[in-house]
Image (tube, rainbow, N blue to C red; front, top):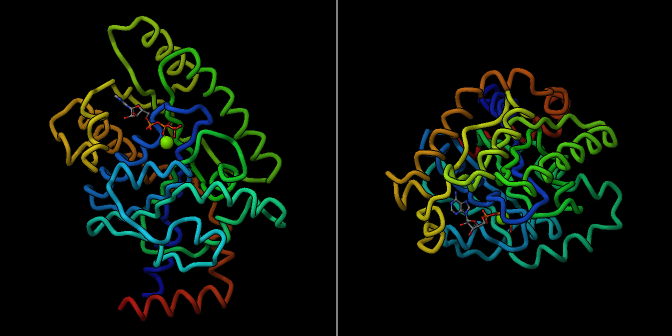
Length: 290
Ligand SMILES: Nc1ncnc2c1ncn2[C@@H]1O[C@H](COP(=O)(O)OP(=O)(O)OP(=O)(O)O)[C@@H](O)[C@H]1O
Ligand SMILES: [Mg+2]
């Protein structure tokens, strides 16, 4: 059991879905990647890190405790997690999260609160974080927890500009905090093949980020409608273009899984596993799950 737990800690992919530009499809992408991976039998935790609380609204989730309680009230993670089916769990958020930035602003290691709270988390293959449209303290916490960044980018001039700025911001954060966050996926969104601007900027994005750019997610009215019914695109309209595009992306993520994990920095997880306290906690969790 212990080696299974150990494997889970080490094989966990920690991904933030981030772009400081608003309305580029971060939440849509986070929800549909999470739903798609869970349909492919991966255990997924989706954390809403945006005070707009769009994940809970889009999936029609009611909740008492959320990410705010974890960050500021020392609440147990399991108390704040809502399970949607056997493979998909959600930690929602709401407007109270805006208070968090103020509350943690003067704490030492204020950028590492999420990382500290989630240390030793097991039972998942993927943790996905839906980030707010800013590079404030909350986003910095997400960036410093994650090992990978997925950047959804609208296929237009402002989207492309935001992508270049995001790349620079990640470089700076990595340098400043001696972190090793890698951009592993750039996801062109809101693509309309009849629109010349979309085609031009899809080319720019692909040329600049050739190895990590996915196929574009096309504009699709079903994607817009799904949140009103509280469903992912796969539950709402499984034959739609939106469902096809997101499933293609999910398959690409899965195909690259082994390769991505093989270059994950292992040191931190191994250090925490060498810590007798962390190991004792893992053993306790293992026996209570047995
Ligand atoms: N492929 C698509 N086709 C049609 N509409 C889309 C598509 N992707 C996203 N949308 C719509 O665009 C709007 C913005 O999407 P979303 O909320 O996912 O962006 P966001 O980056 O999370 O925004 P914010 O920065 O405010 O958090 C939503 O109304 C969503 O339904
Ligand atoms: Mg959003």
